[in-house]
Image (tube, rainbow, N blue to C red; front, side, top):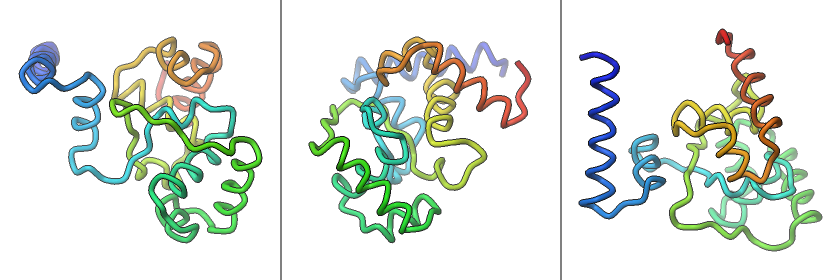
Length: 163
């Protein structure tokens, strides 16, 4: 089957899921990208002024009720650095995250000690798996489009992809 035929088939499946099952685009993408329902982070947590590491730690601590040790295991990072990130996030943002039900989610497994930074992982995932443009990602994450473009290209360079 050609790539164009596969794309058409995927579009038909998405359209069917949206119309017949009354699912949003984000819900379809979340299931497609994470069918096992493994622990994931909504992209909305990265739209705040706190750093991506602080955002993940704050989300996992407050919304998923994980301990520092559990967060460290999930992210493959030292629990002391998790504690520091979480407490730094509290200084910058005391309120909890407001997460819409149809938010696109990123599987936590992608953040395990990859070659990429946390934000590079987020942007790369959204471009490659959710077929989002840098402009749309910038809008959703409250960032400048040029920043998102730069981060995406840096991720591609680190992964050895040609431009």
